[in-house]
Length: 148
Image 1 (cartoon, helix red, strand yellow):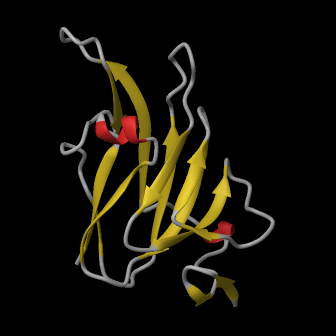
Image 2 (cartoon, rainbow, N blue to C red):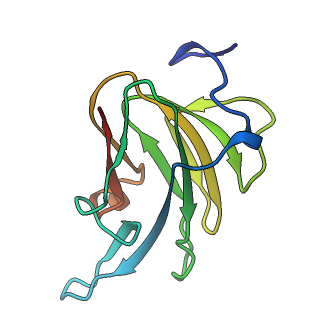
Image 3 (cartoon, rainbow, N blue to C red):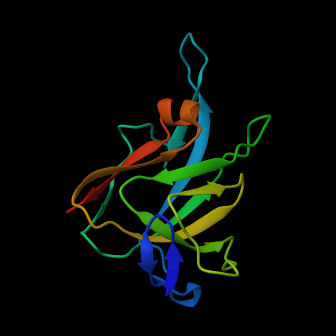
């Protein structure tokens, strides 16, 4: 068993060889075509609240691939993705498992790369997954995680 200061004793949720994502979400950005010419930040080409939620069950392990395609701007952007309501295990970064099991609530997803995570949430309700760069969250890079 692994220990985590935020989550107590927790065992590994999955080995990489067994990982098949329940869903892949794609992070990106785009310029608004309005008078403000602001950048909006998207998940699956949608801005919150229009991003379809992840729906899972209480205490069910959910497998998620987070793909960062935000590479076409002058400055490609990393996105530190933060999960409310629970912690997750980093299963792989670009298909390479970490040297040790890690449990977190935030992981940086580098531009042009992907991170596989496994999580379970023990409380029913609507939780959030969002970029921890607040401008990115505020301009659309956020989604609900519905736990039934």
